[in-house]
Length: 252
Ligand code: NAD
Image: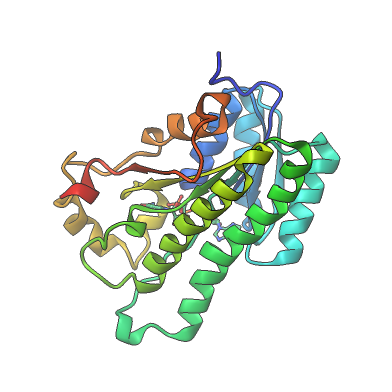
């Protein structure tokens, strides 16, 4: 079965809840060992326990992926524990929400430090291990907002950072494929996770719902097969790709 991940070593950042948590479960169920990475210790440990109870080989790693030391320690920890990294899911991201004319440099920098600079540092640190191995699958979490501007506006730094994640993915995906490392990204539409129930975003959800041809928000389960596919040998001919899963929203 080309979609099985037995014997593979994976990590997922932002795996303490939401999409990352669902990715960690899906990769583990497909046979991978999973490092559950989050800056929130309690969340990371809770998800690690969930995986362990399912019989999945899992560890938690507490790391802030916007800090280069944390990123390198995360990679070193995984390699010293399991001897390799085959699957890197760079999923952690944040979404702040202010009108463009009110977007502070702090908000801009914080968003870019996590979403784009953090994703770059993870890709580079994991990529160095994978290039040495001559094998690796990197899966970044971008967003439908990399393609369209979802109504209503007020997502300037977020949208720009996620467009950056797609270009990062395309560039690395073409640069590294001849050395066995594929880099792709998943762009979810509006997914029912704790993020969209935050104070900032909750008021927007109703409006967004009317923009989705599928007539409902995405559930994290709508994304799980995609991450397993991109992590598996079945997707070996795909690289630099942006896999959009949004119930048709980007077409309306
Ligand atoms: P979430 O806020 O529910 O969960 C994110 C997790 O990441 C949290 O556990 C948080 O502690 C962790 N995290 C945040 N910053 C971190 C950092 N610097 N280092 C390590 N961990 C960190 O978010 P989610 O909805 O599951 O989103 C996950 C990813 O998917 C993000 O990149 C987000 O932008 C993207 N995304 C989400 C949606 C959506 O509608 N929910 C849509 C498109 C893309």
